[in-house]
Structures are given as C-alpha cells and as structure tokens.
Length: 401
Image (cartoon, rainbow, N blue to C red):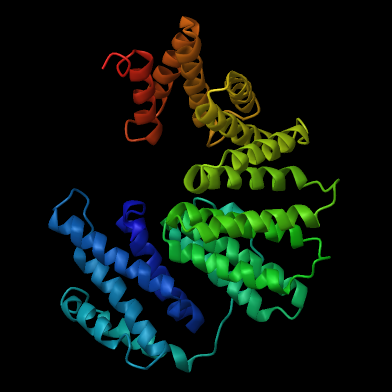
C-alpha cells in the first residue's frame, strides 16, 4: 500500500483503535464494515512487522498492532456474523491474550454491541478544515457525515452532505495516498452529480470538485480515461457557468492545468499545449488582484509557458515564463505551503534564461535561490534535492561533464 511510506505506525494504530471505539459507542455497522478500516489494519500490521524485523528505533511493539487489528476484525465479525472475519480475528487475538489481561472483557463488550440501540452522532462539519489532520480525525468526520446523511430528511441538503462525504474521502486519500480512498470520493461525487439539477447553483462547483478528484487519480494511476473525464467535467462547469460567474477564472485555470497534464503525460500535442496556455492566460487575466487563487493560477500559467518554451525553444515563451514566475511569488503569501516551490520556479527559469543568453546575473540569481532553499528546508524535503540539482547546473556540473 502506498501509504505505508506516508503514515507513521502510531497514527495507523490510533485510527484502527478509534474505529473500534466508535463501533462500541455508536453500534454503527457501516463504520466498522468500511473497507478502509481493513486497509488501515493491514497497513498497520505490515509496517509493524517491517519495523519490528528491522529493530528500528521507536518501532511499534507487535502486540499493539495485533491487538488493535484483531479487535477490528472481531468487531466486523460481530457486525456481520458470516464468518468472513472470524479466522483473521482469532489468529491475531490468540497471541495477545497473555499480554492483555482484560482482552476477554473487551471481546465480550464488542459481542454485546448489537443488542444495544443505535446511537448516531450527526454533525455539520467544515470538511476542508481537517486538511492535514490525523487519520482518526478524518475518519471521525466521515462517520459523523454519514450519520448526518442518515438523519437528513431534506433531499437537497442530503446531496450537500454526500458531497461533503466525497470531500472527506479525498482528504483521506491526501493523508494515506491510497487510491481506494480517492475512488470512494469519485464514486460518491459522481452519484451526487447525477442527482444535481443543472439549474442548481451548486452544480458547477460540484463538477469542478469532481474534476479535481479525477485529476488526482490520473496522477496516481496514469489512467488516461480519468484525465479525459476531468477535462470534460471542467468543460461542463465552464459551459454551465455564466460569463460573469465568480468562479469562472478558477474553472478555466483548472481546465488549463488538467490539459497541461494531458499534454505532458499523454499527448505531447502542441495544439493541446497551446489551448492550455490560452485557458490559463484567460484565467489569470480575469482574476482580480485580491483573489486568493491568483498565485496558484499564475503558477499554473508559468508551468505552461515553460513547457511550451522547452517544446519550441521560442524566446517569448521563456520571457513569459519569467514574468509569471515572479508574479506568482508576489501573489503568494510567505506562509503559503507552495511559497518556496514558486521561488524555486523562479530560480529554474533564471537558469534557463542564463543557458539561453549567457547573462551571469541570471546564473547568480539561480545560485542564490538554490542556496537559500537548501538553508531553509530540511535535508529530507523534496525541494532540498531539487535545489541541489539546480545548484549543480548553475555551477556548470552538467555542462562540463
């Protein structure tokens, strides 16, 4: 699983334990039978065995992983007594009894859950505010949103809750890197879109969100059908939005950036690249100076101009790439998560102009930016290695090789 390299074992352990505890407290069968819980338990067991075998510092004792995963499978067996989880539960919990004195009590407590009344906890939650939160917090948001859907009696409001659920699954994907979580988001969002009227004010935004999910899955799987479907979704959002729609620049930018991805990874068709440049330029031109998305749209336009320069070697594209790289930094707050990456783009573009014109001022600017980033980020940060590569190029390591 991809997310073994992302999530620490302690976070996986907390997520598995929290799912079992929620079942005890609510009796919610849907929560404990969610396949995501099994994926988390398997990831926990795998990463625990790997670190235990390696005797790594801070390795999670295997007993904790077996205990949590075993209780989850036992809870699933109680919730759906078809025997599918029984063997796994017994094999995991068997070695644990001598280490956990009250394990028999815990098992009995789980067995009693179906005899208790269902206790739902529906909540209205701002899902986006949980971006970057630990996995157990995101799972709690998913559960509370599912409860809100069950309790909701208004069809339109129910659609909004279901779209929130899709966004929560996407947050889970961002945290885990597991495409199965992203597919859950796509499946839910597609169903919501199918039930959303074209005249609904939320229709265009849901199309755009759905396109973002598809784009993310394309980047994970390189399945061309996803990037094509993302482009279609963004085109539908633009067609449905009026010329004066406040989100039109965002839809244009999303479409242009997705078309740029398709050019880079699929088609290598210059006509597609030209279309991406035009859409991204229009998105920037129609974005107000105080729009918080301006920096992101300028950064996307910079990437498109740089890609076209690399494809055609036309100097006006390099000049436009330089202009938009600087503008993107100026439009980005210093505490923005992409601020340093956009500064790095400036350095790369200065080096490209140095390689074209031979002006030492450009080379000095690239060198200074590379050194500054290396001083700023930890050595294990991806930008540190990229800055080292930029520094080598500015010093002529590759040119003289």
